[in-house]
Image (cartoon, rainbow, N blue to C red; front, side, top):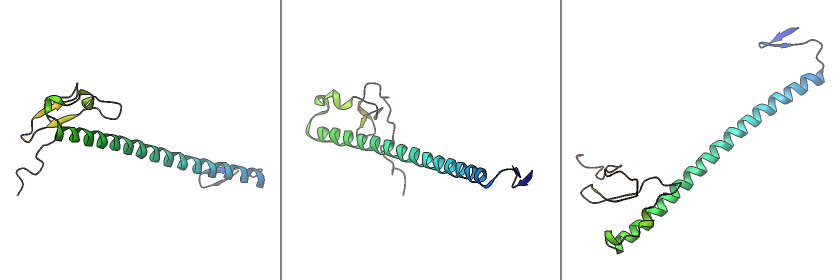
Length: 118
């Protein structure tokens, strides 16, 4: 047996066997790369769909906030689904004035990201 690159190659292996083994290796690598690419594309697609759903929900809620008082906001606008986990409406002072049912009472984002910077 000869050793090439750490792999034992039998001297009795014919050209057909070596070609078949090479084809299997090439196809395995190609399929593994295709699977990784597919998973990456699916992850990006799901993330994009979740971002779009959150942006649409925020736009709808902000439209209602402009035209309706806080106490008249439809509670279904604050309901969460599989894409959105927490909804919060924060006033100019940085206080949570409306939140989804299980939303925390403290803001999850900095309401004044530029405050204190000069």
